[in-house]
Each structure stands twice: as C-alpha cells, then as structure tokens.
Length: 340
Length: 281
Image (cartoon, rainbow over all chains, first blue to last red; front, side, top):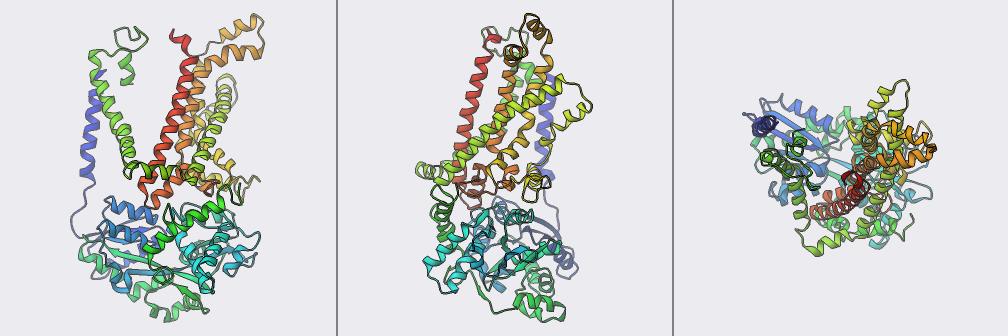
C-alpha cells in the first residue's frame, strides 16, 4: 500500500514542478491586454485590425476580459498586463497605488481615455411607465435595478449621475443626497456587477435599469425588447486605457491606434462615444451622431468640482465604513427602513 | 484509499477507543499532513492573518457593522433551514432510491449528483429564469429570502442523499421484520429501528449541507437581489468588501463566518458521537 502512496506523491511533486514551466510566456514581441467585460467583441476586432498595420505586425496579443475591479486586482496580484482597459478611473488609481501605472496617466493624450459613454436608463419596450427624467424614477410604483455600489464600478457612476443631475437642476447638496436616498427606496435588486444587473432586468425584474449607454447598445444589438432613454442631465463615463510601467513601447502604440480616427469610428458604431468627436461627422455615422449629440444635455464629468475626481468622490460616497452610501443603505434597508 | 489503510494496520487499531498510529504508517500520515497543510491550514492561516492586519478595533468595527450582522444572521438562518430541509427530504429521497422499485431508477440516481457538476453561477441563472418574474411555471420567488433557500437546497441536495443511501443499503431488513413480527407498527419500526441507524448518516450529510450553504455564493448572487439588510448573504457582503478594496474587512467577516460554522459543525459532530456511542462501546 505504501508503495502506491509513494508513486502518487511522486506524481504530485512532478505535476507541481512542471506547472510553472508550462505557463512561461513565449518569446518575441508580445502584448497582453487586460480589459473589462463589455468591450470584448469590439476590442477583439480592433486587435485584429491593429495586427494588420505596420506598427502591430508580428506582435502577438493575449487578451483577458472580466469585471473591471477583478481585473485590476488580478494585475496588482501579478497577472501580466501591458495595456489595461478598465471601466472606471478608480480601478486605474488602484494600479497607480500599487506602483504599476504612472501617476500621471491622466496627462496622456485624451486624458488616458479610450472611449466615453453616459449613464442611461433602460426601460421595457414601448416605455410603458413613461420614464424620461430622473424624477420619474421615484414615482410611486416604479422599480429600479442598479448594481451594488460597493461591488460594482457601474453602480458608482449611476449614483454620482443621480446626484449630479439634481445639482444641475439647482438642488442643494442635502436635497440631492436626499434624492439618492429616495431613489434607493425604489431599488429592487442590487446585483454584484453591471452584467448581473442587466441579466436581472432582462429576466423581467423592475421597470428601469441604470447602466452605461454602451452596455444598453450591446443588449439592443442582441435583439432584446428594451428601450434606451438618455436623461437630460447625466454623467460622462470615461473609460481609461493605460499602459503599465513595465510595458514595451508597442503598448503606447496600440493605445494611440485605439485613439486614432479609424478605431474611434469603429468604437462609435459599437455604442461607445468616441474621444475623437470629429469621426461623428462621417456620413456613415450619422445615426450615431444623432444618438450621441441630440438634445441639449448637461453632462457632468468626474473632474467637475461637484466631485473633484475619482479619489475624492470615492471617499465621500463609497468608503466602506464612512461613505454616504453606507448611511443611505442603512436608512433604506436597515431595521428602521421601508423594508422588513 | 491509501489514507484509509492507515488506520486498518495489523495492530489492534482501537485498543483503547482511540486509533494508534503504527511506526510503518509514517509516510501516509506525513503525506496527508502535507496535503492538508497546503490546501486547508495555510490558506485559513493566511485568511486569519489578513483579517487582523488592521488591528482588533478595525476587525471589530467591520464585523459588528449593522450590514455585516444582518448578512450573517440571514446566512446562518438560511443555512440552518437548508440543513433541516435536506435532512428530511434527502432522507426521503434516499429511502425511495433504496427501498422502492420503479422504472428509471438508475437515471434518477444519476440525476441526484448533477447539482455538483453544474457551475453554481449557472444554477443561479437557471433558477432565476425558472422561478423569476418571467417564470414559465408561474412561481416568482426571485429576489426574496425564499429564493436564497431554494438556491441553497439545489446545490446541497446530494449531501444527505449520498450520506444516507449506503447506510440504508447495508441496513439488514431482518431487524425490521423481527420487530414487526413482535408486533411493532410501521411507525414504531421506523422510529426505533430504522431512524437510529440512519441518524449518523443524516447528521453527517446535514453538516456538509450546512457548511456548504454558509459559504455558497454562485447560486445565490444572481437570485437574491443582494439588497443590503434584506437579501444580502455574507458571502456576497464579503465580495463587496473585496471589490471596495477592503480586503482586511472581507477577511474579518470571513473569519467570523468560519468560526460560527466551525462551532456548528462541532456541535453536529458532538450529537453524532452521542448517538453512535453504543457502536463504540
């Protein structure tokens, strides 16, 4: 019997010894892209296109997609990454704190941003509850789906959009915060990620889903019976794409390609707002120009004095022990709240 | 199998009620010790280490925060309900599979283990589609506490069935027949003959189900709606701490979860020892 154990132990030892060798990276110019989930189809296309350009020829590319926060943590934990494409600047700041990305990433061309989006309402086909504005969300009987702000970057944009919309309508800080609290009394599901929230909404729960405009277009492209509403006041979602400190020169060249007019036109046709706005004047993109620029809208950026950038906004709103959302969640869901 | 052979050596293993390790058994014992250290002891030690990195005050602040306490109560409540449901329905299922003859029994027997093979996130997705707002069977349970129990029952179903089944198969029906011939009714036979024999198996299965239910995330995260204070279980709360960059807080809540689970498992083990004491006497 012990002979068998020995063989087994030897096999296990061998397996452990061989594993790291098998995961070594191949030789030659190679770039690894670590990105959040939604842009996977369009990014795969851009990577293909880049490898047919002189700069991208012969560069092998590995791509990894997953929830933005999880991807950022994986990079901090040691996952090889030359280019990071994340859904909030906050996740990039996490890479900065770990010393993996330059502190001045925001000073790169286009502020280190690869594409934009805005916070949008997704409603049922035909908009049966006539939802147009933020105040429509807190009408009696309206059910709202948004992810949990402590587990999802997408939820953070939604909450800041609700707050800033009220401020742009002339409300005080206190009134706008009260509005967010009121809004959360209508929230019927706080999923762990934007993707899960979309799934919850598509199974039939709720009247409105708060999400990225680009996510909504992805769902529309999949043929879902939903309707997209862009509120007059909303928040600009800036999607950063940054090179890591250790990345080869090709990483910057790839990012420059993504910010080129050619790539931006493709992003624009896939539901993302281009950072090179001039591409929208192309006749082929007329539909998207109308979608992205129609109406006179107040679009607030995270750099607006209302928030003062991601780090401050995160500390004020989403600190896990002292943030405003901790208090709001307690008031809404706790023993004294509306629920039971 | 090699590990099991360690206690069945040539020397009387239970000389004084406690298995003795013979000198020749050092290799398998060492191997098991290394294996357990690598896959259980070290990760848990690292978890405890991480949880106390920010000091005792910070540890206490996180685990005593109202949201963490609400999540913990919901998690333990749901896990206990799930263990009880499994103890009853799992035993009945095992009974039907062993004692009754029907067509397709082999198939049903194979189906029992399927919940283990399915990625639990897929289980969650399927349950939302089946018992959510668009339910084809007209049952809308999703985003309630009932949905959490349902999802946990799904992923823990095999534990009690598989723990009770072999005991039932081994159980000699002669004992029951003898009892019946002595005038015992059906209920008395079950209560005094069958049930005491099954109880250790039921307890083992229920303990496994309880432990699994406490830690489960995949099956629950989609169907619960994760409303803080209402339908947010501890595993999801822990995940949100991690996503918020509060790894120490996440570890702290996980450590509390582990301690409470450990206490529950010890209690169940204690009951099991109590009901099997005649076998060891």
